[in-house]
Image (cartoon, helix red, strand yellow):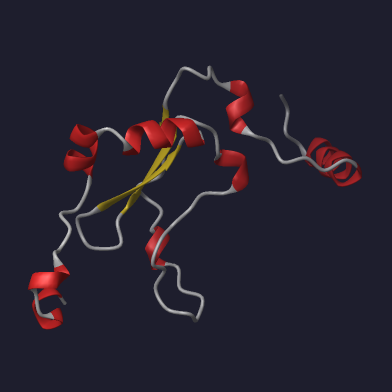
Length: 119
């Protein structure tokens, strides 16, 4: 396809007359898993005067069950994952004890601890 000025302006004009948000989930096999991201884009490096972001989320068009997005994490050397699953799939995953033990951060028993020990 030739992307010249005339074609691009025509595409923009057509979109303005009938705007749509494309959803990637409609173009992929529902039994598949898609992994995406750009390690070159510093997601936490953008600062808009409110301080460093505490979490990241992709936009609406990128949401479908089975989609996983990875970002360089907030802390040096870490990785953030955004996992999109249907509610019933997420419930089943959260009910899987072996998975939750492997994927969770150990919890603290605050009843036997001083707040200063935890923080």
